[in-house]
Length: 568
Image (tube, rainbow, N blue to C red):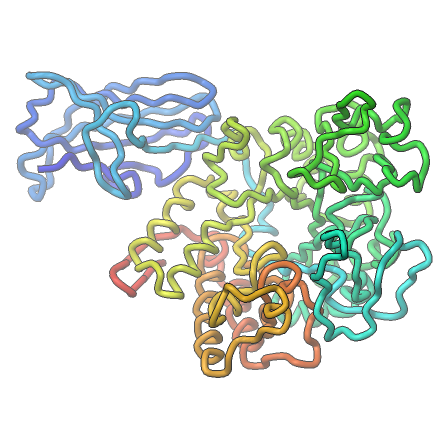
């Protein structure tokens, strides 16, 4: 006989999943009578708050199907918001045993090196804006969506190349020195996005997430040159204000990409090329000098993001940087939210200090109580460790949502037949159990992003080992295309039926293909739309928007065997 405990089963733990501070929790464990147990203690340890013990009491077993078992129950609440791990300590007539987690639902005898159950306790009263729960999001890479009107290149950082044919492949070849400059543009702009708002409305989109729009040298704009300016190729500050106004009139929110762990080297702040004057690289008395980490004999060496010298890292907790980005009357956050932005997606959240994210979250809520902060986290964000530090995204009022890559990976694996329904269900329920419900309802469920291959290519490509020259022109072979479309529909169906906000990467809904960056960043194929796939997306996004159960409902697995997955 085995010890019986399942944290996902209400017969063993209520409520399901996370707890608020001071919320009551009930647990039961069933131990074979042959163990001759005397006492059972639930032992919890908070990552930052230390140990807690709960004495469990024996309860008469009334369910005849558990003959031969002794039932122990305990009730408790936790005062501190923290990430807790727990196991059961059992004293018996002839010794002791400690019970730990084994696989998904089983229990094993072990020691402190064994896996424990997780319990996330989040701040009392915390919630997320209802207007972001269970919505339809649309991610736009601004340069590649739609070009409306003429491009103003007069203030564009040089050098750059503007494609005249939107059907061109983005430039991917390095120069003679092996450098890929990412300085080719297609001219997509803010007016173009505004022009296509009716298209997005017909797609039932309620949230638009824009990749960076701040002034920058590159086409991806993760190398910020000026946090307070719209990149000239995208338009003006007034264009952004008008985009927000028009989107809000149609019931859509605007989320901006916040790149706050580094700037560009070719920026107002660092100014390595001496383009602006007064930058930190050439002027030790620059008001921005304390933002950066200089070293070496001549102080010309500096810490950069993953060693990329065009992306110097910033000291996020530097007072002047905090004032500039977060705290100031006209901080970067305040500037854009006053213009109409409804929140921020934080690039590389793992590389931002917890306290920085906490302060940023607090400021966003001060500016707009219904503002949202999304974090780029690729793993389970509830227990993430980065740079040897356990992160406090959910226990310290930091993130309202994350980019939910665990669901993306599970959906793709299941649809491609690389995992069975049982593994898929495990992935679904692990996130549902570990994430506070207000956050789970807002997570960003994507199938593709600017950092990953296009979903249609993932599901239909015949090879993934092509050279970059081959990838530039590769298309799904005709004999595999029909299967790819069927798989894409199945994946999208799961994407929008699961908890959270389904996020469409621009062009996925019309069959845009592409391998990794930059092939996943082609111009939107307005003249080559897969109408059948688009109609399917309109149908499932309509379902998401019209049924509260798909927006804020509880997730339950009914059947998960082989290739059969049924959930409500």
